[in-house]
Image 1 (cartoon, one colour):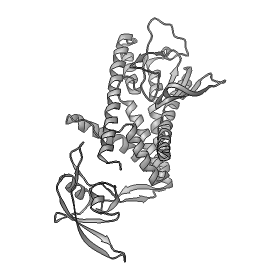
Image 2 (cartoon, helix red, strand yellow; image 1 turned 60 degrees about the horizontal axis):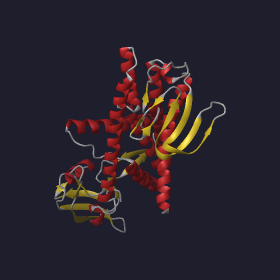
Image 3 (cartoon, helix red, strand yellow; image 1 turned 90 degrees about the vertical axis):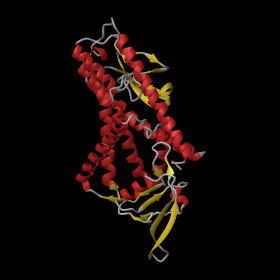
Image 4 (cartoon, helix red, strand yellow; image 1 turned 180 degrees about the vertical axis):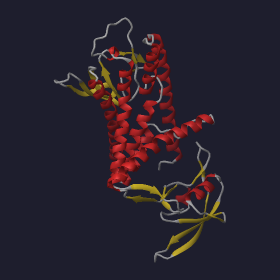
Length: 378
């Protein structure tokens, strides 16, 4: 029970940190542009606790559902769809122009479309700034993690075929079904291509005296219900390399680039092949990743927060109404048309966007549960 509470608290901290940074981005740009901020909220639903700043008159609050947040700007008209109301935030955002109203100079919709876009863009940018800083911190202090290209096992996941077959950390895989293995990629390809087929694996392992010896084991890769490939539950050996001060920033850039392009490439591939993105993770998946990171050490937790921050920033840039990217898209259309979009148009766009985001959340949560039932998180 204590472990569950700690896992839950750490997951909330990781999500809360990236949400606060996201919201802070909206807040500081809005205030810089002279837009009055009325409320800064972490979470949704009823308020747990909060306070009002005597200097800025902004209400800061923490709410019961820790799955996002919002910054309420003066003059924003809040609409409720499916029980979710919002303003500019790291979650669902319903913000519409209220027709027939005269807006004051310090209100959001009195601003030209491009200034509103800057406010919307500030949240995702701050997520990328946080991710870059954390990636650089990990690289500079602990070094960069570089998976080995050799077929040497770095970790064996309990409960999966490799563990059942008694494979161990530091075992080197020499051959599979008499075919010599020259690299980790070659070894993984062979395993992926033979789900539910018994394989004869020759490994090299040091005995108690440190002398290498060859052993032959049999194992059967487990078919992944989502991708259909064979998996045995092993992770490559990872080496850490210290890149130096300047190198840490270069490493951070590469990490940000990788964790941005990799999801885009994955989603693009799924769309081209009309396949569902079954590797998506929701809150349960993030909780499991946080738990695993805590077992590895503080550097892994920091690195995971950077990944989550990158993911939140990227997701909010998608041109889906109710997300920051959707607002940027709609405000840009407004700029091209040189007139505000009608309330009905905004309402329909927000309803479609909210339904789509809700569908993604439910689908990702279902995949989390499926992976948990299949034991891939043990």
